[in-house]
Length: 213
Image (cartoon, rainbow, N blue to C red; front, side):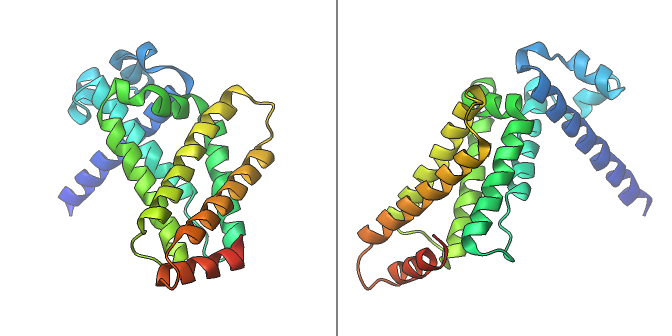
């Protein structure tokens, strides 16, 4: 029982350090933060910090990983909502996160891979999680090539437009959200058009499009 408690304390301390990392990287750039800064902010020794993270780069990677997981939780589709409202709610949550954590979001998608190659894997895991959410809504376990290309393209468009929004704040969040909703409908519609007739996938896609978008 004691070993479990010690493990819990270790996990809690590590999580608190990562949460601190998210706050720090949301306010300052990677280059402007040193391990000494992190240790001072956390109120721990630099040696203890190195016990959890072998380097500043590893600390950064784990911070980005947790930020990605947190965004996934925030944007998890709500099954109680109608499909189109489910999409709007997820997009709203995404844009709220982008606005609140603008610096860390921009750092991840603009030069995160340059800081640490592992960030590329984290981004791909995030995109695949979003893909699975859409496929679940469509009642599919696997996306046919046309549908996968459509959803993948939409995800990358959302990332790029979100970054652009951070430097063009005159664009209203509600307008950007509706742009994302409309573009998803258009992509889904074209994928449906290109899907071979009579396929089960096309049938499912027609139903979902009719019900939601």
